[in-house]
Each structure stands twice: as structure tokens, then as C-alpha cells.
Length: 467
Ligand SMILES: Cc1cc2nc3c(=O)[nH]c(=O)nc-3n(C[C@H](O)[C@H](O)[C@H](O)COP(=O)(O)OP(=O)(O)OC[C@H]3O[C@@H](n4cnc5c(N)ncnc54)[C@H](O)[C@@H]3O)c2cc1C
Ligand code: HEM
Image 1 (cartoon, rainbow, N blue to C red):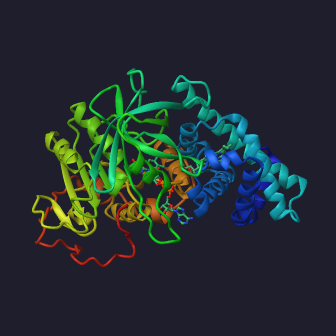
Image 2 (cartoon, rainbow, N blue to C red):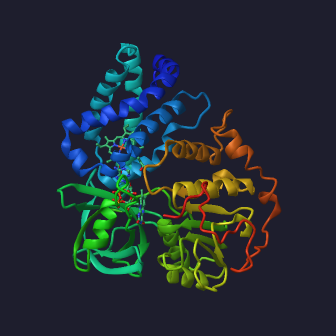
């Protein structure tokens, strides 16, 4: 909590500081990396830096946290820290690095807002920073303790036991410990950070979701090689490095498993929706439900470019087929000549889905895909709090804020204001699906074109293709 004077000062200066944060963060990172070049080379994702995503994420998170701190009836700001804390833990971030970030962040603030930063304003924002930093340090320490390791001691050597092409541009790696001991415990939906040494000497780290390998002493990741778009948007560095260079028997440096988006036990029906490589956490959920003999109703929806591009296609089909109450609907931009059941051409059309009134929905895919599907589900009456999603990149601060509000709502924390009263709650009126119960699907085969279904390859600007 902030002191009373700091609270007032932050409330008064939030708009000005918030507006300047976009100018502050590039200066902050330049200062940080000039003083500590190893952080840029070995810890931070340099593609995110080049695009500004990570800069926006950190800045946005601090502004979002401050806005919750000063909200009179808002949820506890710490509710938005699970994603950041898990990401930090998967990178081995430790408490001693927070003063380093503070030093350069505040030097950048003075660079940009020097004229208006009074000692009171500086002191108030210092309180915000340390409130958030201490909360993150606590979350991260808790995660390290849960994993039974010293803070930051998350990096391990794994051996690639098996490498398999899962589609033309995705490859899976079964990872085992070098001495054959048990693979570190993980929950479906969690990920590991994988570190590689690139040819130019940079040590770069990315996250990959875990799926089961069929054996307790190993686990699997599946990597999509991200292609170049043009000269300005180069090919992904780590994914292509892994695709081209890592083979059976090789060692791979990776973290212990972390990640906050896991599948809670329960009986509620599940709607699992993925696009492209976003299927990995969903496949982890499915494997878990299948191997534990779950009788839950599970509807799986997957979108991809084509059946050939759909990695783990056969595995997904088999698992769903073997589950007592599961279905799989697929949408392919280009379905080719396939005549399989429940395969549609074009983009996901929610009209084809039978929505369970009390379903919990899990989404993973490109941001624009998830935004479009989420909006569609809410229009169909799904409660916003029942929609959970994984983002394969720096999480937008809005998502973190929404997560905080959603958790607060579930716990019954009263609040006068809602973050997004029109978009989320008002629109997700319980009147339709919550009261109506299950509606039958209207599955249509290719050929009998469903409403909104397009055979044309023209892109719908609101929903870019799956990753
Ligand atoms: C929790 C989590 C789980 C994930 N799980 C998986 C998974 O199971 N499988 C999987 O394949 N991926 C997964 N990802 C994504 C993965 O971590 C990587 O982001 C992905 O592999 C791309 O990394 P890369 O190094 O190849 O690309 P990067 O080099 O990081 O590039 C990323 C994008 O930025 C673009 N870019 C790079 N530099 C610039 C520039 N200067 N200007 C403009 N654009 C630029 C690239 O073209 C590319 O499109 C996950 C991510 C998260 C956060
Ligand atoms: C209060 C201080 C901090 C805040 C608010 C903060 C916020 C964030 C956010 C929002 C993300 C993106 C998370 C996501 O993927 O969704 C992130 C990632 C990250 N943070 Fe922090 N962070 C803080 C401190 C630190 C410190 C002290 C370090 C270590 C020097 C650090 C290193 C990183 C790294 C390496 C990433 C991943 C970067 C990437 O993949 O591009 N952070 N942080």
C-alpha cells in the first residue's frame, strides 16, 4: 500500500506519467543496457526490444498497477502479477536485479519529465515501483520455493531424446534429464524457457509450452519456425535456430516449468480453442484429461492454414476420439481435398458451436484471433470471466488488468466500477447461454458452406491468419 500523500500524488500525476511512459521506456532500456550489456545480450528478448513490445509491456504494467493502487474500489493490484512473476521465474530473475531496474527507470523519468518531477512526485512513484517490485519479488520467491530451488536457480541441461517433424514448419523435441532422473514436475498449460547461443554470440531465451511425451521421465515442446515476412520483419531467431540445429542427443539449456495458465480440476464443460501453434497448451490440457480418464464435456476447436500445416493433427484426433465426451471441430483456410467430418473452410465460425451454459473457455493463438473469438463468445453470452487465454508474447497490460478484475469478481470482491463495463460484463449478459443450457451443434461438412464461411483466400482484416 502507498502512504496517503503518495496515493494522492500518484492519482494526480497518473495521467501525465502514463502519457510520458512511452518516451521514458526506450531511454530506460538504453540506459539499462549501456550500463549492463549482458542483460541485453543474454536475458532480454532482443526481437521484443526491436519491436518495442517488451518496453510497452513493462511500462504498461507499472501504469496499470498504479491505476489499481489508486482505484478506490479496485481489486488488489497483486492479482495482476501472476503472469509477470511466472515469466520472471522462468528466466531466473532475482531480487538483486530490481534496484538495477529502478536506478535506470528513475534516471529515465528524470530525463523525460525533469521539469515537472518534484521530490514529492519522485518519492510517490518510487513507492509505486517498490510496492510492485516487492510484490513481484514475493511472487517469484514463492514460485522458486514451490519448485524447491534457491531463488533464480532454474536453469537445467536437458537431452533431446527424440526429434519429430509435426508439420512442415513445426518440430517437436522430447526432452529428458541427462541422468535419466524424473523430469521436473509440471502442470498442463505450463511452459519452459529455452536458451540458445546464437552464432553472433547472443544468448537468447524463449518460452515453449510443455506437452506430455508418454513417459514420466521426459516432456515435449513443439516449436514453429517463424518465417521472415520481408526485410523489415526478419525470421524468428530462436525458433529457426532450434528447427535447423537441434537434433537427437543434443543438449538443450532450459528452465524448470512455470506458468500460471493451468487447468483447474472440476466438472465444468470445457471449450478449448486454438489457432496454429497455439494448440500446444491446449494439447497439454487434452492429454491430461485423456490420461486421467476425465468424463468432462470437452469441445475442441482448432484453426489452421491447412490440414498439412496442423501440427499434432493425428494425435489431437486420436485423443478426442478416445475421450468419452469430446468433439473436435477444425477450420482450415485451405482444407484442400479433405472430406473429414467436422472440417470447415475459412475462419472459425462460432455459430457452428454448441455452447455449454457453464463452459470454461481456454484460448490460445495470435492476439487478433483471440480478440475476435473472445468478442464473438461474449456476444453469444459467454461470461467474460469464463474466458482464459495464453499469449505467446509479452502480455498486454490490459489483459493483466482484466485478469485482476476477473479474479476479483470470482472471489466476490465488491467493486463499484468495472474496467470494461460495456465490453466485458454488460455484453456478457447471462440471459442467453447461461440460462439456455446446451444448444445442439449444427455441424456442416465442407461443400455445404456454413454462414460466414468463405472459400475465398481474401483475408478478413479483423482476423489475421493463424500463426
Ligand atoms: C507462455 C508462452 C508459451 C509459448 N509456447 C510456444 C510453443 O509451444 N511453441 C512455439 O512455437 N512458440 C511458443 N511461444 C512463442 C515462443 O516463445 C517464441 O516467441 C517464438 O518461437 C518466436 O521466437 P523467435 O526467437 O523465433 O522469434 P523472434 O526472433 O523472437 O521474433 C519474434 C517476431 O518478431 C519479429 N521481429 C524480429 N525482429 C524484428 C524487428 N526488428 N522488427 C519487426 N519485427 C521483428 C520476427 O519476424 C518474429 O515474427 C510461447 C510463448 C510464450 C510467452
Ligand atoms: C517492477 C519491476 C518490473 C516490472 C513491472 C516488470 C514487468 C514485466 C512485464 C510486464 C513483462 C512481460 C511479461 C509477459 O510476458 O507477459 C516482463 C518480462 C520480463 N522482465 Fe520484467 N519487470 C520488472 C522487473 C524486472 C527485472 C528486475 C528484470 C531483470 C533484470 C526483468 C526482466 C524481464 C525479462 C528478461 C522479461 C522477458 C522479456 C522478453 O521476453 O522480452 N524484469 N517484465
